[in-house]
Length: 142
Image 1 (cartoon, rainbow, N blue to C red):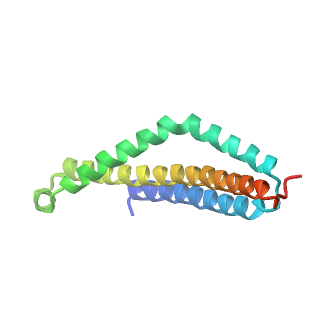
Image 2 (tube, one colour; image 1 turned 180 degrees about the vertical axis):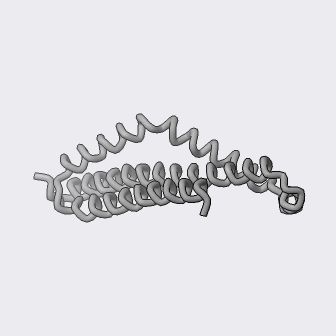
Image 3 (cartoon, rainbow, N blue to C red; image 1 turned 120 degrees about the vertical axis):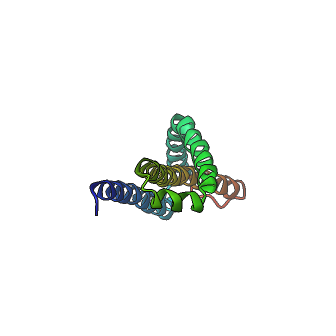
């Protein structure tokens, strides 16, 4: 494989491992939530909300970029690509490859953002369930 492919796949692998680690962390957080009191979960939720708020613009930018990249990808006409290959138009093919790599990287970044949002949403759901149970007299809070 070429160095460009090796670098791209290595970076993608690292990013996917980060997504996997985030998913494992979320799973662990959910499993341990039933053992925590509402104040502990609320504290976790507050941290998750603060983290999301700090990254909101970055995440919104990724989503917008992904939408644009998807539209560009849809416009990538195979007949043109075949012509570029036949005519050995390397710059156009390299640009196309770079766009595809950037699209993949942006997709992974959006997945990571979604994991953070999933964590915040899950913690919020648990807090709300605890509120409902507390109001019903079934609380583990105190």
